[in-house]
Image 1 (cartoon, helix red, strand yellow):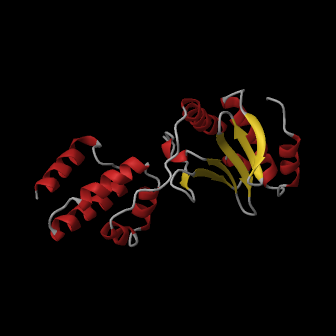
Image 2 (cartoon, one colour; image 1 turned 180 degrees about the vertical axis):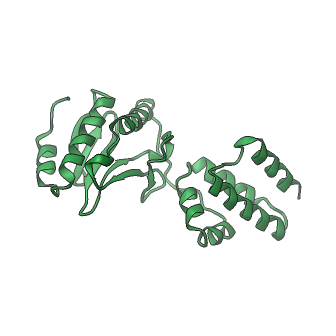
Image 3 (cartoon, one colour; image 1 turned 60 degrees about the horizontal axis):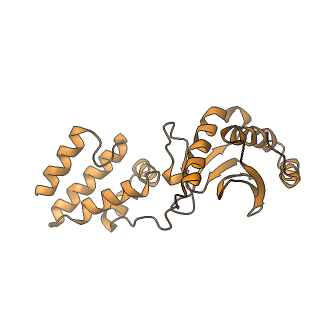
Length: 204
């Protein structure tokens, strides 16, 4: 592991007892992704920096998290990431040391480092969903969560598809189909059935 930052050591020592082994595992998994990452304290918690801030770890009373500041752009095959407070922010939450999948965390960090190395900027604003879709998602918690985890480009695709409907009934059909697709884990352009559905809807 690269040189430890004494301020990060102090943060871990002062963290809630349940969180200490989690933080230690996360720290090791993060450094395993790139030996050039350095430690700092930003926003009151440990941050891991290369060109910019790649990720950070933070302990709360009931859970511990690793935060990715460009998380919306990361590949997440294991569906570990949760939406954060900004368009780009994503996090993985843990309540027990056994929940930490070190290899999966390292893979996410490697992806985040690649974005940092390439100078990719995080999106500043999340695409605004049409009001009809927002209303429908408010009635379906699973679909709402699935939509929140989409990359901005996929949210924009759904929003544009709904917004370009010329008639109210067409717009409503597209909203219903969007909810169904979200529940199936599909996006605009995923699979032949989705593509056909989109073309039919656009023709209405």
